Image 1 (spheres, rainbow, N blue to C red):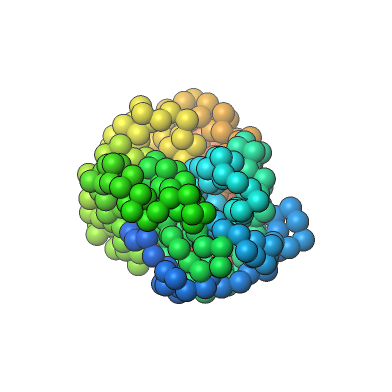
Image 2: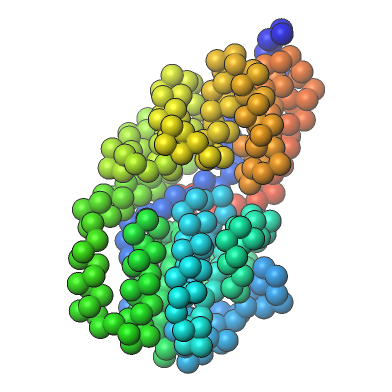
Length: 348
């Protein structure tokens, strides 16, 4: 099979950096707080278009405890938060507590419907056009879950999402329902692994800093932040994938492949990891392996930007410049169609 590189087509690093700048790669940050609402203050009301309904309104939860989970598309933590919240609320008194989801990613309805179909999480889902409500809350982290008291005042916030947050959400909900005292909640939380949780939160903070630096073009500094994130949460998947992506865009294929291989050895079914490894395969000349990975992902991959880009790189290396250019255009159109700036910039 002849491998050629068409001079008029941009390099892997150039295209991948550009696609990353267009696509929203949201990152979590540290902190269990909101910038716009203090604990004890009334949570602002909302009335938004729904994912599958005309409207979703906080008024429907009046007099009950409200759990609102604000999500971001194409983020594994957000998917887990949706599934965990659904599982927790299924164990509680549905007449006294209401679960709503919300996201500003209104153009990613199919992603959210896929998540819901897989988990059975059919609670009301609000679409926050223009991130207006998220701005009122002062959100700095995705996902973020908030729990109110029955009088509508903000009682608890969970920023980002770690494996222990499912239990934490349950404890917060039970406290809001009066089933546990604050002292009992504190005692049970103390039995968790606070050192590990704090390390994950610090790792998440470094990921957010890296996203800001990357958006500013400070790639070396972003790599350093991601290396710190990986060292703090060595069992995590998102930080090493972020690192592999930026290393690949910078042309360090060896390091990118090393990080990807380590992540996929632990969690082989990560679509983003498989897409990035397909790009590594292309750069290594393993075109058959790349084709196999991408074909497997073609019908199920949620991130069409990376998928089209990866196919474009594969077609380019096969010498099919016309098909490569078409795929690159599709990647660019998918990214621009999201209508969002890169994460780390002020109000995706």
